[in-house]
Length: 233
Image (cartoon, rainbow, N blue to C red):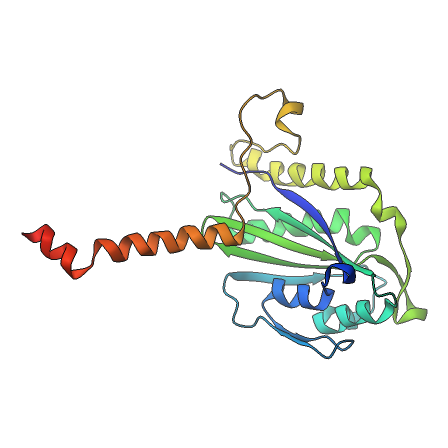
């Protein structure tokens, strides 16, 4: 059964994060941060099944290059505590194919972010039993006078807009879930839905990796030579 998960975080220098590093990790690529000189190499990262950049019509074509886009973001920010990007993480329905998940994501990103003037860099990660997507968003308006970026758009920080993004992710998934005759998801809390069951917890990559390792350990224990010998006896 599809689960609902949609979280929004800020990527900022005060927490030691870089938009270039975040993009390299999400896309599983090697990108050098021109501001710091650090190279972030995630080219050996497994599980990245799709990466794509979506731009507003008035954005420079060069921003289709991931390194150019996020280095431009870092270049325009002067403060040591700058907020450089916004990250939206969503769980993808396991009932959808990769092609369907890509289309659902593109519809959602275009309507909620790109059409509003944001550049969006999204990647799909397919861990066993935990398909999800990372969407990295720019925080400034597009302006040719400032190497592509102008002023910070404070309207995008509105709490009501955040709730709208969460609601719209559920709606976008539900179009296809309903078409497939599957149970729909709800962005509201269980209390708001009038349900009394205990909420489930979204399983992150560390938990998924631990579960995988536990299965490997059990398998190895089961097929140790001494255990096989004891079983045969």
